Each structure stands twice: as C-alpha cells, then as structure tokens.
Length: 471
Image (cartoon, rainbow, N blue to C red; front, side, top):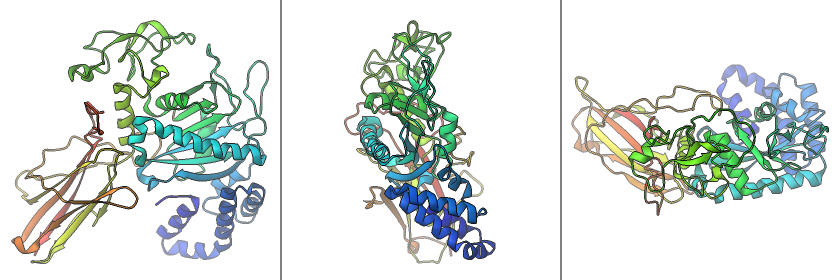
C-alpha cells in the first residue's frame, strides 16, 4: 500500500530485481537520511529536516526520489511536510485529496495553523452527506508549504506566496491561485491524483477547476462548492451576476435551453425524479441559463449537492476507484485436484450506509458458446485528474448462470470480505468459469431514489473471473 514516499521508495527497490539490490546496498545512507528527514518533517521539525534533505541532495544526486527531495530544499516557498490526515486504504484505489495552504509562513505558529486548518477542513468535507457516504473511498493528505509572504495579489500589490494567490478579476474578487504551480508540488507525492484544496489565509470566497479547489478561509460551504467545480466538473447554479461569462453554454448541471428533452439531465426527467426540471437563473446570470433544481444545491451556495450534481460526484469517484479492492487468489487460472474444495474471496469497499451487491456465477466453461466475461478493462494506466479516468469499462456481456451469494464479514478497516466456496467433490473433471460481480446500486439508507440514475460507462459495476480446471 502506498502511504508515503518512504513506502514507495522501498517498493521501487523491491520490484527492480537484482540490478537494484546493489543500489539498495549502496544507498543505505541515502535511504536512512531520507527516512529520518521524513520523520522530522511530520513532527514539525522543519529546520533539521531541511538540513538532512540538503545533505541528501548534495551527497546522493542519483537517489531514486531526488526530484521529490528538491521540493524540500527550495530556497523560496519550500515544501515542508506531507502527512496523511485520513487513511482509508491503498492510494492505488482511492481518491487522494491534498489540503495545502498559501500565505502560511515558515514560522511554527503559521504552519501549526495549517495543520489545524487541514483537520477542520477534513471534518467539514465529510459532513457533506454525499461525500460522507463515500468517505472510505478517499484519502486526505496535508501538504505543508512555506510561503515567503502572506497576501493576495491585487490593487497594485504583489506578494511572494507559494501558489501566487490573486484576486480572480471577477465581480466578487474571488481568490484564485496558479493551478499549474499547485500541480507541480503535488508531484512530490506518489499518491498524487492531481486533486487539492488550497486554503488562502488572506483570501475571500473561492474558485475551482482543473482538480484544484481554492478557498479563502475555511468556509464549509465554499469548500464543497469549489470541490464540485474541481473534481466533478460542475458549474455554478446561482443567478447573481459575477461578471461577463460569455454566451450561455451547456454543462453537466446547466443548460442554455429549458427544453426538457434537451437538457443534459434529461434522464432524471425520464426517471421522474421529484424536484428535477429546468429552472431559469444559473451560471452567474439571471436569464438565458437553466439549472435542474429550484434551490438548495451546493453549487448554488447552500446545502448538499442536488440530485444531478450528486450523480456527477459519485460517478467521478467511481471513475477513479474500483469497488473491488482485493482478491484472493488473484484472478487467472486455478487447478483444483478432484475432491478438493477451494475458497475465493473478494474484498469490496463499503459506503457509509448501504452495502455493495456481491454475486458469484459458477458455470461450466463452454468454448463453443457464450461464457461469462470479466471487467474492468483498464484503458488508461496513468492516474491523475487531468488524464482519462483510471478505470473505464466497456459494455459488459450478460452473465450466464444463476447468481449465488457468498459469505460476508466486515474487516477491521471497514471493508467487506465476501467468500465463495467451491466443493470439489461435487464436480466432474473439466473446465469451469467463476465470475464475481460487484455492483453499487447507489441507494443509501433513507434515499427514495438511487443517487445514480444513468451510468453509461458501467463505473458502478466491476467483475473478476477465474478459469478453474478440476482434475
């Protein structure tokens, strides 16, 4: 599991084979320096940690993670520490969000304020009902960065801050930052998904997009609103004028037409979800743009995400997270001596108030006719918000055979293990196919309708398969 740069370093050494074995031995001193510097950083002893990082940079320029080390040794606006606030599991299968700050000076008092602010923001983040339901799908990290000054560019004054905070130029003077610089700092962590919440000490309101939510202060409503922009590509639903935005346009949750057969959320209309229609006044204008609900959406500045926005958030989560978190044994071909039983276990994620559906399909393998296939098909190996979703699933064929249930139990870390047993003494020799299907129906406890009405890419469903040879 990827928890820190230290863990990734050991993984890099482990997977590279014999050639790296010598490198590991040669780099024992470098590894010890790095690990000690990391410990000191997390404890807040930044001056001593920076001395060790500089020593590492000078004496071991070929260190595998030297590019990350150079963020810590910057003369201006250095990275000070990366620590995990909420650890829900392996970063390879979680949405990793970083909380960082602009305008927080190197002095201990300022950095302590960022530590405390990150804790408060994490709590506020998961008080949102939509995000709370899928809290176990997120890891939250804190990234301490020291700014040279504390201020927001504007009114003829420029400040030297880590992320170049500035007034956006909008009618309300919302604070924004240089997203490209934020993305550069995020690359110092192997858990990088390109997602950050940036707290600006002297800013007001906020902006969001491109994976980065910018918040002046720590207002909970602003955090959820800007994260909707940054993560789920949602648009503003308020009607108050915030400056020239150009011609009205269609988005996931706004439309330039009130025609219910043309709005982007027409599948909600067809499903007759209460309260969803086309209401004029959205996208920062009173006329010419329509939103799906009349009031109460976080993208309108209040409450939880509306039904349409909530669907986009959930689908965005599942574009990065597979509901199947682990398998035992790994999918592939299994040989089973006659009469021997075998157990197959899938570990699945667990939303806060509703279980995922787990079904098993065990059938003879027929090479001449239809057979069960498995998903997901990974089409983009690279992680990161700016890239294609890490997981996309092609159209899945119908499953053959009768769905069977396994035995479920919760794990200590809040996930669910579901085990299916094959009794070998009941089987004749031959080839068989075992498929596990996991589906999130996205209907939390108390919800009248599913949170996801249309899942075009089958993101909420995942399958794995084994070919089993019974001798």
